Image 1 (cartoon, helix red, strand yellow):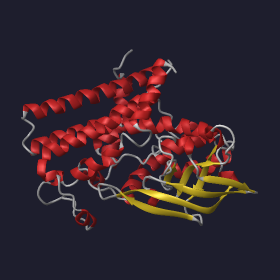
Image 2: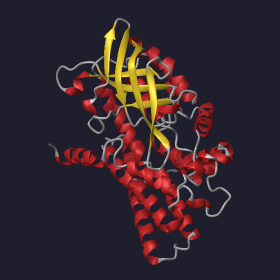
Image 3: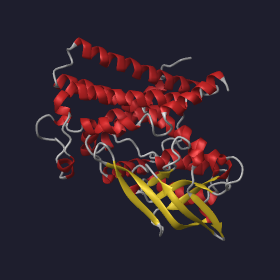
Image 4: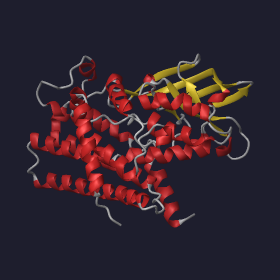
Length: 393
Protein backbone atom coordinates (compact mmCIF):
# COMPACT_ATOMS: atom_id res chain seq x y z
CA UNK A 1 0.00 0.00 0.00
CA UNK A 2 1.58 3.25 -1.18
CA UNK A 3 0.38 6.32 0.70
CA UNK A 4 2.70 8.72 -1.15
CA UNK A 5 1.29 11.03 -3.80
CA UNK A 6 2.51 10.56 -7.37
CA UNK A 7 4.20 13.39 -9.33
CA UNK A 8 0.95 13.82 -11.27
CA UNK A 9 -1.00 14.16 -8.02
CA UNK A 10 1.51 16.65 -6.65
CA UNK A 11 1.17 18.70 -9.86
CA UNK A 12 -2.61 18.58 -9.46
CA UNK A 13 -2.23 19.87 -5.88
CA UNK A 14 -0.15 22.80 -7.11
CA UNK A 15 -2.76 23.61 -9.76
CA UNK A 16 -5.54 23.66 -7.16
CA UNK A 17 -3.44 25.70 -4.73
CA UNK A 18 -2.74 28.34 -7.35
CA UNK A 19 -6.36 28.58 -8.48
CA UNK A 20 -7.68 28.92 -4.92
CA UNK A 21 -5.07 31.58 -4.13
CA UNK A 22 -6.20 33.57 -7.17
CA UNK A 23 -9.96 33.18 -6.66
CA UNK A 24 -10.72 33.03 -2.93
CA UNK A 25 -11.90 36.49 -1.75
CA UNK A 26 -9.55 37.91 0.88
CA UNK A 27 -12.34 38.96 3.26
CA UNK A 28 -13.67 35.39 3.32
CA UNK A 29 -10.18 33.97 3.83
CA UNK A 30 -9.66 36.30 6.81
CA UNK A 31 -12.93 35.25 8.42
CA UNK A 32 -12.22 31.54 8.06
CA UNK A 33 -8.67 31.72 9.41
CA UNK A 34 -9.93 33.63 12.44
CA UNK A 35 -13.18 31.67 12.94
CA UNK A 36 -15.27 34.81 12.46
CA UNK A 37 -18.93 34.74 11.49
CA UNK A 38 -19.64 33.79 7.88
CA UNK A 39 -22.81 35.19 6.34
CA UNK A 40 -25.06 33.50 3.82
CA UNK A 41 -23.54 35.80 1.20
CA UNK A 42 -20.03 34.64 2.14
CA UNK A 43 -20.98 31.00 1.67
CA UNK A 44 -22.83 31.57 -1.59
CA UNK A 45 -20.14 33.83 -3.06
CA UNK A 46 -17.62 31.02 -2.70
CA UNK A 47 -20.12 28.41 -3.89
CA UNK A 48 -20.79 30.43 -7.05
CA UNK A 49 -17.08 30.95 -7.70
CA UNK A 50 -16.63 27.18 -7.51
CA UNK A 51 -19.76 26.67 -9.59
CA UNK A 52 -18.46 28.78 -12.47
CA UNK A 53 -15.40 26.53 -12.57
CA UNK A 54 -17.57 23.40 -12.36
CA UNK A 55 -16.09 22.55 -8.97
CA UNK A 56 -18.98 23.14 -6.58
CA UNK A 57 -19.78 19.51 -7.35
CA UNK A 58 -16.12 18.53 -7.12
CA UNK A 59 -16.97 14.88 -6.38
CA UNK A 60 -19.43 14.55 -9.27
CA UNK A 61 -18.75 12.39 -12.33
CA UNK A 62 -18.41 14.04 -15.73
CA UNK A 63 -21.76 12.59 -16.83
CA UNK A 64 -23.48 15.00 -14.40
CA UNK A 65 -21.30 18.02 -15.11
CA UNK A 66 -18.60 17.39 -12.53
CA UNK A 67 -14.82 17.27 -13.08
CA UNK A 68 -14.73 13.46 -12.82
CA UNK A 69 -11.81 13.47 -10.39
CA UNK A 70 -10.73 10.29 -8.68
CA UNK A 71 -10.74 9.90 -4.90
CA UNK A 72 -7.18 11.21 -4.46
CA UNK A 73 -7.85 14.32 -6.55
CA UNK A 74 -10.99 15.03 -4.53
CA UNK A 75 -9.01 14.71 -1.30
CA UNK A 76 -6.30 17.06 -2.53
CA UNK A 77 -8.88 19.61 -3.66
CA UNK A 78 -10.58 19.56 -0.24
CA UNK A 79 -7.25 19.82 1.57
CA UNK A 80 -5.98 22.78 -0.45
CA UNK A 81 -9.27 24.65 -0.05
CA UNK A 82 -9.25 24.09 3.72
CA UNK A 83 -5.62 25.10 4.22
CA UNK A 84 -6.10 28.24 2.10
CA UNK A 85 -8.97 29.41 4.31
CA UNK A 86 -11.89 28.65 2.03
CA UNK A 87 -15.25 28.14 3.75
CA UNK A 88 -16.38 24.57 4.14
CA UNK A 89 -18.85 24.00 1.31
CA UNK A 90 -22.36 23.63 2.72
CA UNK A 91 -22.73 19.89 2.05
CA UNK A 92 -26.49 19.41 1.86
CA UNK A 93 -26.71 20.14 -1.86
CA UNK A 94 -23.50 19.01 -3.60
CA UNK A 95 -22.34 16.31 -1.17
CA UNK A 96 -25.57 14.81 0.16
CA UNK A 97 -28.73 15.19 -1.91
CA UNK A 98 -26.99 15.40 -5.31
CA UNK A 99 -25.51 11.87 -5.11
CA UNK A 100 -28.94 10.53 -4.14
CA UNK A 101 -30.58 12.27 -7.10
CA UNK A 102 -27.83 10.95 -9.39
CA UNK A 103 -28.19 7.38 -8.13
CA UNK A 104 -31.94 7.11 -7.60
CA UNK A 105 -33.63 10.16 -9.14
CA UNK A 106 -35.41 10.25 -12.48
CA UNK A 107 -33.75 11.87 -15.53
CA UNK A 108 -36.25 14.73 -15.15
CA UNK A 109 -35.23 15.26 -11.52
CA UNK A 110 -31.56 15.20 -12.46
CA UNK A 111 -32.10 17.83 -15.17
CA UNK A 112 -34.24 19.96 -12.87
CA UNK A 113 -32.21 19.99 -9.66
CA UNK A 114 -28.54 19.28 -10.37
CA UNK A 115 -27.68 22.47 -12.32
CA UNK A 116 -28.85 24.74 -9.47
CA UNK A 117 -26.78 22.74 -7.00
CA UNK A 118 -23.65 22.91 -9.13
CA UNK A 119 -24.00 26.67 -9.71
CA UNK A 120 -24.39 27.38 -5.99
CA UNK A 121 -27.59 29.33 -6.67
CA UNK A 122 -29.95 26.95 -4.83
CA UNK A 123 -29.49 26.39 -1.10
CA UNK A 124 -30.56 22.95 0.14
CA UNK A 125 -31.43 21.88 3.69
CA UNK A 126 -31.67 18.44 5.27
CA UNK A 127 -34.92 17.22 6.86
CA UNK A 128 -33.97 14.08 8.74
CA UNK A 129 -34.05 14.48 12.54
CA UNK A 130 -37.27 14.89 14.49
CA UNK A 131 -37.87 15.43 18.23
CA UNK A 132 -38.24 11.65 18.68
CA UNK A 133 -35.98 10.52 15.86
CA UNK A 134 -32.35 11.58 15.89
CA UNK A 135 -29.82 8.77 15.71
CA UNK A 136 -32.82 6.43 15.44
CA UNK A 137 -34.04 7.77 12.11
CA UNK A 138 -36.32 4.79 11.54
CA UNK A 139 -38.68 6.39 14.08
CA UNK A 140 -39.56 9.39 11.88
CA UNK A 141 -43.23 10.38 12.16
CA UNK A 142 -43.48 13.31 9.71
CA UNK A 143 -46.29 12.02 7.51
CA UNK A 144 -46.80 12.23 3.74
CA UNK A 145 -50.14 11.01 2.42
CA UNK A 146 -50.68 10.56 -1.32
CA UNK A 147 -53.68 12.47 -2.66
CA UNK A 148 -53.85 12.25 -6.44
CA UNK A 149 -50.85 14.04 -7.95
CA UNK A 150 -49.65 15.38 -4.59
CA UNK A 151 -48.34 14.28 -1.22
CA UNK A 152 -49.82 16.11 1.76
CA UNK A 153 -47.07 16.52 4.34
CA UNK A 154 -47.67 17.12 8.05
CA UNK A 155 -45.16 17.02 10.87
CA UNK A 156 -41.94 18.50 12.19
CA UNK A 157 -38.21 18.34 11.59
CA UNK A 158 -35.64 19.67 14.04
CA UNK A 159 -31.95 20.65 14.15
CA UNK A 160 -32.25 21.74 10.51
CA UNK A 161 -28.86 23.35 9.95
CA UNK A 162 -29.10 26.79 8.28
CA UNK A 163 -32.69 26.02 7.32
CA UNK A 164 -33.45 29.75 7.54
CA UNK A 165 -31.52 30.10 4.26
CA UNK A 166 -33.00 27.06 2.55
CA UNK A 167 -34.66 27.16 -0.86
CA UNK A 168 -35.35 23.42 -0.91
CA UNK A 169 -35.26 20.65 1.67
CA UNK A 170 -34.91 16.90 1.20
CA UNK A 171 -36.98 15.02 3.76
CA UNK A 172 -37.50 11.56 5.12
CA UNK A 173 -41.27 11.16 5.51
CA UNK A 174 -43.45 8.30 6.62
CA UNK A 175 -45.70 6.97 3.89
CA UNK A 176 -46.64 3.64 5.52
CA UNK A 177 -46.97 2.13 9.00
CA UNK A 178 -46.97 -1.46 7.79
CA UNK A 179 -44.06 -3.81 8.45
CA UNK A 180 -40.75 -2.71 9.92
CA UNK A 181 -40.38 1.04 10.55
CA UNK A 182 -37.62 1.27 7.91
CA UNK A 183 -39.91 -0.05 5.17
CA UNK A 184 -42.45 2.80 5.39
CA UNK A 185 -40.13 5.76 4.75
CA UNK A 186 -39.94 7.80 1.54
CA UNK A 187 -37.56 10.49 0.27
CA UNK A 188 -39.24 13.76 -0.77
CA UNK A 189 -37.87 16.99 -2.24
CA UNK A 190 -39.84 19.98 -0.90
CA UNK A 191 -39.80 23.62 -1.93
CA UNK A 192 -39.37 25.58 1.33
CA UNK A 193 -41.41 28.44 -0.09
CA UNK A 194 -44.47 26.17 -0.25
CA UNK A 195 -47.53 27.31 1.75
CA UNK A 196 -47.57 25.59 5.13
CA UNK A 197 -43.78 25.43 5.64
CA UNK A 198 -42.67 27.32 8.77
CA UNK A 199 -39.07 27.71 9.94
CA UNK A 200 -38.52 28.55 13.62
CA UNK A 201 -35.05 29.34 15.00
CA UNK A 202 -33.30 27.35 17.72
CA UNK A 203 -30.65 29.50 19.42
CA UNK A 204 -27.73 27.32 20.46
CA UNK A 205 -25.30 27.56 23.40
CA UNK A 206 -22.94 29.75 21.40
CA UNK A 207 -25.72 32.31 20.91
CA UNK A 208 -26.03 31.60 17.20
CA UNK A 209 -29.00 30.88 14.97
CA UNK A 210 -27.51 27.88 13.18
CA UNK A 211 -30.26 25.30 13.58
CA UNK A 212 -34.03 25.38 13.27
CA UNK A 213 -37.33 23.63 13.65
CA UNK A 214 -39.20 23.16 10.37
CA UNK A 215 -42.97 22.59 10.51
CA UNK A 216 -45.15 21.20 7.73
CA UNK A 217 -48.86 21.99 7.90
CA UNK A 218 -50.78 20.36 5.03
CA UNK A 219 -47.96 21.12 2.62
CA UNK A 220 -48.74 20.05 -0.94
CA UNK A 221 -45.76 18.39 -2.62
CA UNK A 222 -46.04 17.29 -6.26
CA UNK A 223 -45.69 13.53 -6.54
CA UNK A 224 -42.94 13.91 -9.13
CA UNK A 225 -40.71 15.22 -6.30
CA UNK A 226 -40.57 11.74 -4.77
CA UNK A 227 -37.08 10.33 -5.30
CA UNK A 228 -37.07 6.71 -6.38
CA UNK A 229 -39.85 4.46 -5.14
CA UNK A 230 -42.33 5.07 -2.35
CA UNK A 231 -41.35 3.36 0.93
CA UNK A 232 -37.75 2.85 -0.27
CA UNK A 233 -36.40 6.02 1.32
CA UNK A 234 -34.48 4.16 4.01
CA UNK A 235 -32.20 2.71 1.35
CA UNK A 236 -31.51 6.17 -0.04
CA UNK A 237 -30.99 7.60 3.45
CA UNK A 238 -28.29 5.03 4.26
CA UNK A 239 -26.56 5.85 0.99
CA UNK A 240 -26.58 9.54 1.93
CA UNK A 241 -25.44 9.04 5.53
CA UNK A 242 -22.19 7.42 4.39
CA UNK A 243 -21.40 10.70 2.59
CA UNK A 244 -22.42 12.76 5.64
CA UNK A 245 -20.33 10.85 8.18
CA UNK A 246 -17.19 10.93 6.07
CA UNK A 247 -17.77 14.66 5.52
CA UNK A 248 -18.13 15.29 9.29
CA UNK A 249 -14.64 13.81 9.91
CA UNK A 250 -13.14 16.71 7.91
CA UNK A 251 -9.47 15.91 8.47
CA UNK A 252 -8.49 18.87 6.30
CA UNK A 253 -10.16 21.38 8.59
CA UNK A 254 -8.44 19.61 11.50
CA UNK A 255 -5.04 20.28 9.92
CA UNK A 256 -5.92 23.95 9.38
CA UNK A 257 -7.23 24.39 12.92
CA UNK A 258 -4.12 22.72 14.35
CA UNK A 259 -2.06 25.54 12.84
CA UNK A 260 -4.52 28.06 14.26
CA UNK A 261 -4.14 26.48 17.71
CA UNK A 262 -0.37 26.89 17.46
CA UNK A 263 -0.78 30.56 16.49
CA UNK A 264 -3.05 31.18 19.47
CA UNK A 265 -0.68 29.36 21.82
CA UNK A 266 2.23 31.51 20.62
CA UNK A 267 0.21 34.72 20.90
CA UNK A 268 -0.85 33.84 24.45
CA UNK A 269 2.66 32.82 25.54
CA UNK A 270 1.91 29.18 26.33
CA UNK A 271 3.50 27.53 23.30
CA UNK A 272 6.78 26.99 25.18
CA UNK A 273 5.02 25.39 28.15
CA UNK A 274 6.08 21.73 27.91
CA UNK A 275 2.83 20.31 29.28
CA UNK A 276 0.78 22.35 26.82
CA UNK A 277 3.10 21.41 23.96
CA UNK A 278 2.52 17.76 24.87
CA UNK A 279 -1.22 18.24 24.38
CA UNK A 280 -0.66 19.88 21.00
CA UNK A 281 1.64 17.01 20.02
CA UNK A 282 -0.95 14.40 21.02
CA UNK A 283 -3.57 16.19 18.96
CA UNK A 284 -1.22 16.39 15.98
CA UNK A 285 -0.50 12.66 16.18
CA UNK A 286 -4.23 11.91 16.17
CA UNK A 287 -4.81 14.19 13.17
CA UNK A 288 -1.99 12.45 11.28
CA UNK A 289 -3.47 9.06 12.22
CA UNK A 290 -6.89 10.17 10.96
CA UNK A 291 -5.28 11.38 7.73
CA UNK A 292 -3.52 8.02 7.31
CA UNK A 293 -6.87 6.28 7.69
CA UNK A 294 -8.34 8.51 4.99
CA UNK A 295 -5.33 7.83 2.73
CA UNK A 296 -5.74 4.07 3.22
CA UNK A 297 -9.29 4.37 1.95
CA UNK A 298 -8.09 6.46 -1.01
CA UNK A 299 -5.33 3.95 -1.77
CA UNK A 300 -7.84 1.10 -1.80
CA UNK A 301 -10.12 3.02 -4.17
CA UNK A 302 -7.25 4.01 -6.45
CA UNK A 303 -6.04 0.43 -6.86
CA UNK A 304 -9.53 -0.94 -7.42
CA UNK A 305 -9.62 -2.87 -4.15
CA UNK A 306 -12.65 -2.98 -1.90
CA UNK A 307 -12.78 0.33 -0.04
CA UNK A 308 -12.67 0.07 3.72
CA UNK A 309 -16.08 0.57 5.36
CA UNK A 310 -14.87 3.13 7.88
CA UNK A 311 -17.38 5.98 7.56
CA UNK A 312 -18.49 5.49 11.18
CA UNK A 313 -14.92 5.28 12.45
CA UNK A 314 -13.91 8.43 10.58
CA UNK A 315 -16.91 10.21 12.06
CA UNK A 316 -16.02 9.16 15.62
CA UNK A 317 -12.37 10.20 15.46
CA UNK A 318 -12.97 13.33 13.40
CA UNK A 319 -15.66 14.69 15.71
CA UNK A 320 -13.56 13.99 18.82
CA UNK A 321 -10.59 15.80 17.27
CA UNK A 322 -12.77 18.83 16.50
CA UNK A 323 -13.81 19.02 20.14
CA UNK A 324 -10.23 18.68 21.36
CA UNK A 325 -8.75 21.49 19.32
CA UNK A 326 -11.50 23.89 20.43
CA UNK A 327 -10.83 22.90 24.06
CA UNK A 328 -7.10 23.50 23.68
CA UNK A 329 -7.71 26.91 22.10
CA UNK A 330 -9.83 27.85 25.11
CA UNK A 331 -7.11 26.64 27.48
CA UNK A 332 -4.45 28.59 25.59
CA UNK A 333 -6.40 31.86 25.75
CA UNK A 334 -7.47 31.37 29.37
CA UNK A 335 -9.80 34.09 30.72
CA UNK A 336 -9.64 35.98 27.40
CA UNK A 337 -11.66 33.22 25.75
CA UNK A 338 -14.56 33.39 28.19
CA UNK A 339 -16.48 36.54 27.19
CA UNK A 340 -18.89 35.98 24.34
CA UNK A 341 -21.18 38.96 23.99
CA UNK A 342 -23.76 38.05 21.37
CA UNK A 343 -25.16 41.59 21.10
CA UNK A 344 -21.70 42.94 20.31
CA UNK A 345 -21.20 40.32 17.61
CA UNK A 346 -24.65 41.07 16.20
CA UNK A 347 -23.75 44.76 16.01
CA UNK A 348 -20.77 43.92 13.82
CA UNK A 349 -17.84 43.76 16.24
CA UNK A 350 -15.90 40.52 15.92
CA UNK A 351 -12.59 41.50 17.45
CA UNK A 352 -11.04 42.28 14.08
CA UNK A 353 -9.17 45.39 15.12
CA UNK A 354 -9.36 45.61 18.90
CA UNK A 355 -7.21 43.68 21.37
CA UNK A 356 -6.73 39.93 20.99
CA UNK A 357 -8.74 39.26 17.85
CA UNK A 358 -8.01 35.54 17.99
CA UNK A 359 -9.93 35.22 21.29
CA UNK A 360 -13.24 36.69 20.13
CA UNK A 361 -14.71 33.55 18.61
CA UNK A 362 -13.18 30.86 20.85
CA UNK A 363 -16.04 30.42 23.32
CA UNK A 364 -18.65 30.27 20.57
CA UNK A 365 -16.67 27.69 18.60
CA UNK A 366 -16.11 25.59 21.71
CA UNK A 367 -19.81 25.50 22.55
CA UNK A 368 -20.77 24.82 18.94
CA UNK A 369 -18.45 21.82 18.66
CA UNK A 370 -20.18 20.03 21.55
CA UNK A 371 -22.62 18.83 18.89
CA UNK A 372 -20.14 16.95 16.72
CA UNK A 373 -20.25 13.68 18.67
CA UNK A 374 -24.06 13.71 18.48
CA UNK A 375 -25.25 14.85 15.05
CA UNK A 376 -24.89 12.62 12.02
CA UNK A 377 -25.25 9.63 14.32
CA UNK A 378 -23.97 9.82 17.91
CA UNK A 379 -20.59 8.33 18.79
CA UNK A 380 -22.27 5.62 20.86
CA UNK A 381 -24.37 4.52 17.88
CA UNK A 382 -21.35 4.68 15.55
CA UNK A 383 -19.30 2.50 17.90
CA UNK A 384 -22.03 -0.14 17.82
CA UNK A 385 -22.00 -0.03 14.01
CA UNK A 386 -18.22 -0.36 13.91
CA UNK A 387 -18.32 -3.25 16.41
CA UNK A 388 -20.93 -5.08 14.32
CA UNK A 389 -18.88 -4.50 11.17
CA UNK A 390 -15.68 -5.85 12.72
CA UNK A 391 -17.05 -8.58 15.01
CA UNK A 392 -20.36 -9.42 13.35
CA UNK A 393 -23.72 -9.71 15.07
